[in-house]
Image (tube, rainbow, N blue to C red):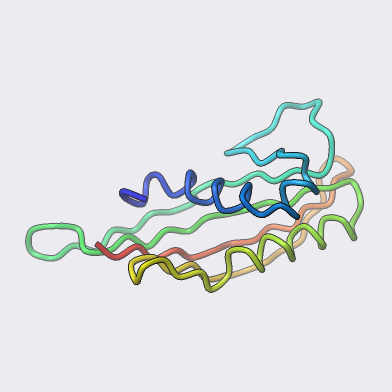
Length: 126
């Protein structure tokens, strides 16, 4: 990860690398939206905030919030997928510079789909 703007690429790579997640969603992990005819279950992710911390002459840290939606047409499958995503990302540390922590989890329903909405805080030190 070069900076906080490209965190979506990191999230995608981490999720698609997990064979349990990849198999469950058949590779359907997408940024921001999915096509209307996509089959359940699937994952949608997006960066919802990026807050840089500045020193006198440069950025020293980005704090990023990522929203990851685990969507299915059955409640139990949406929960199972969210649990896999959480176990894959929560408390992940990368070479002392990157830390990912679950901040919040909510449930929603939209157009007969069950959504488990996970919010992760990511701190990237430079």
